[in-house]
Structure formats: C-alpha cells, structure tokens
Amino acid sequence: MIRALFTASTGMQAQQLNLDVIAHNLANVNTAGFKRSRVDFQDLLYQTIRPAGTRTTGSEIPTGIQVGLGSRPVATQKMFAQGTFQQTENPLDLVIEGEGFFQLARADGSVAYTRSGAFKRDSTGQIVSSDGLVLQPALTIPPDALNITVGTDGTVSVTTSASPTPTTVGQIELARFANPAGLNAIGKNLFLLTAASGTATTGQPGLTGFGTLSQGFLESSNVSVVDEMVNMIAAQRAFEVNSKAIRTADEMLSIANGVMR
Image 1 (tube, rainbow, N blue to C red):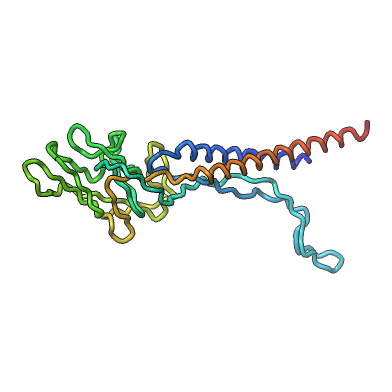
Image 2 (tube, rainbow, N blue to C red):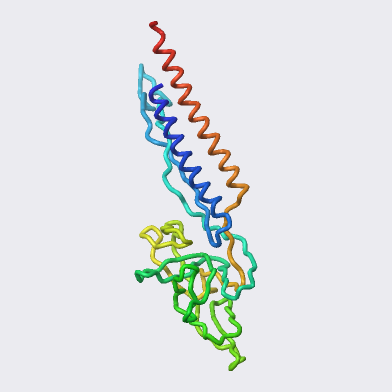
C-alpha cells in the first residue's frame, strides 16, 4: 500500500505535465507557424518478486511476479504536420508547402529557424520578421518598389515606376533537418539546431526535399482544438483515477492501522 502511494503520485505528476503541454497547444491555436507538442510516457522500473523461468520442485515457472513503480514523461515531441493555409493578400506573407524552415539572423550572429512567414520591411528595405530578425540570405526591397512578387522557387522580383519590367532582387533559401523534432524551441516561433536535429541543409524551394513557397498566405497552427479538448479530458480522468488510487491506499492503511485497536 505504501508502494501504491508513490506509484500513483508519479501518475499524477505525469498527467500534470501532460495538461501543461495541452494548455500550451491551446494557447497557441492562432499562432502562425506553431507546431503542437505531444508528451511521450514510459513506465518506471519494476520490482521483481519472483522472476520468470525459476525452477521449483522440478518444474519451471512460466510467468514471474513483477510490480511496476509508476510512469514518467520522457519527451515532449514537436509534431511538424502541415497546418492549414490562410489567405492574407499581403505580398510579404509567405507559406512553405512541404518541408523546410525560413532562416533568420539573430543579434548574436547565430541563425534561428521558423515556419512563420509573416515578414515585413524595415527602414532600410530589408525583409525581417515581426521581431526585426533579418531573413537569410538578406534581401533588400527598393524604396520605390510598386509590386513585390515571390515565386514558388523563392525568387523575389519587384517592379518600380521607373522599370515596369520585373527585376530580380534576391533569392529566398530554406533549411531542412534530418530530425526536425530534435530542434530546440526557444519561443517567438523560433527554433535552434541541436546535436539531435543534425546540421541544417539549405537549398532553393522546390528542389528535392524542400517545399515550395506561396505568396500572400500564412500557415496556421496545426493544433486541433477538438483533439486537444479530448486529450485534456483524458488527462483529467487519468489524474483523477490516480488520486483515487492514493485515497484508496490511504484508506487501506487506515484499516490496517486499526486492526489491533
């Protein structure tokens, strides 16, 4: 019964983290480019009371006696399934159809990666994120640009009053990883590479392994409110039944303590 108290408590702690992750998913249901997370669980060590295969009185025991000691969360995995597209008609809103990440230069010189294509122009005409991080490779839009066109292959061209013929001003490149789930999420829709994700492979949109770009669209969060609500109910019930196991073990201990009264 003492063992049951500690075992059930691990279940409650695991479901608390599960609910925290679900709440984070729901909080970002309208965040462009957001990817939902999922908690992976595993069981803890087992106490072996009688091992399987033990021979007794000339026969072999086919199954032993093992008592599990609970569960624990082992990973929170990002699910990089494609989100739905929302049309914005903003020429600097871009969406990646398929695999790949936009590359952004951080203040410390490192590169961050994002699926959010909500870009703007800064005072110098460079294409930047909402936080002012410069899209890599850097692109500068002329101040007299009338129309901005981004091709599916990432080619950026503009027309001006002086030159109605489209002029190419740069090329957007994407990055991809062998294991995108291994990226380190740092908030602000940004990811950093890790040893688990592998190094970034960069290339032109549309090439083998890379998605294509669509202009005037944003990728919505891939969070399904219905699925998350179902997961939340399941987490709540699992938390509740573990708390009931603790209460039942406590009641059994109380009965045992009162036997000799």
